[in-house]
Length: 354
Image (cartoon, rainbow, N blue to C red; front, side, top):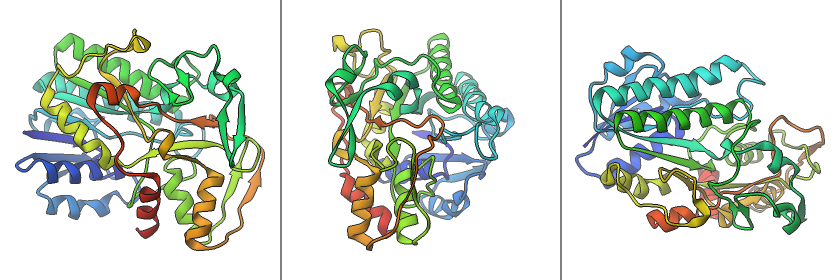
């Protein structure tokens, strides 16, 4: 099989390529990357040593994609991944739409031309901000937890996390809406032109080699800052770091991707009534409750691992931040027999050693 990976030299793309080439001997991989992300060029030699042909190019440019030639599958890992993209920093509002939506459309045109299947790596941030930001929570062992009253009457949420049936109406953030639009356009293209498509919504992806930031890759960022005794602050909410996220190591997606490539357009069929109205091609793959923690919990882990370090407190809220985002991957278990394999402590320790 011949596979094109977009964003191949980023953290997620390179980790998935490494896992796929190990488990699929004979797999031919072409990776394309525009190298605008910090550290991405440092992955070129590692990928080339695996037999990957690395192409410098931009998926927003049709000619760059055409230069790759035909493949059977595309694994789309290219994105501007920060939830603050377009409202803070050097990335403009147009840039985030250009990368995440126009780039996806160019990739879909490539799939249409060559009849290639597409696996789109999406995000937990496609869900409506309002019900998540106003949901009643309580602090349990240093971490926010939704209350029963807070979850009552909200579709697609339980103590196990957010399911695929949670509302996706705006506001979502510019980043979130760019990814949700990309999902919708991908579904339309796949239906119109008959190529296979899977949309994998992931939580926070984390592991060694990630250049994390406060607004993207928070687990890697927090551990690196603590280890190097650089400034850290809890921002917003109670100012105590109670906000919670789940994390997943990218390599845990590899067995799933192999099944998705092999299954073509058929794959499993959703039978759970809870997910009626959710396209069968859309599914969560996250760490879940077992791989979730608050920033305060993460600080406790860092304190035991590296020693004490002062953490400041800023109560002013940050745009689009949410108190509790944990993905319920029950549908992935039912449909694909999938579970995260790398525990939270193992993910954190891998980051700490990198």
